[in-house]
Image (cartoon, rainbow, N blue to C red; front, top):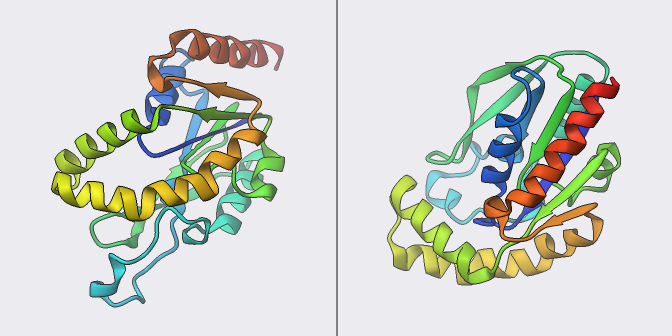
Length: 204
């Protein structure tokens, strides 16, 4: 089993990189574990206070459960991946049944932040992008998908996203085996990654 961690700032193009890798590999060979699924449940926090939760801080994630699930997959056991609602900031009762596969990708802003998790990874990738480009993507995504105003997105970017990126996400670069500049538009880097994974699959 090949375990790959893909990290990078919000709006850096991680999701596009992951999508292109999965599309270029045989169907059924890859399991994707989005780090966002492992946010801690906030149902005990009063509704009006949930918007104050810092979702870009390492403390927002249940690292122990994510590590446990990766270990189970390595051992050939299936897992029940949690699901999380951004609207209510709570973990849902539904889970996603996941069987072990040859390639496991852990994708998220802080995928390389936790030492125990990093030590399980065979390949660590950091997707990099210019801060201005990331901000534009975040505005486009949050306005369309999450119903926020551009002003609200920029305020949150300045107050939370930028300082958390500099404090926790950017330093993870030093752990990466491969840094992918220009995110999902860097086809050369994606091709190299895909070739690496395909070589691993052939040797299994």
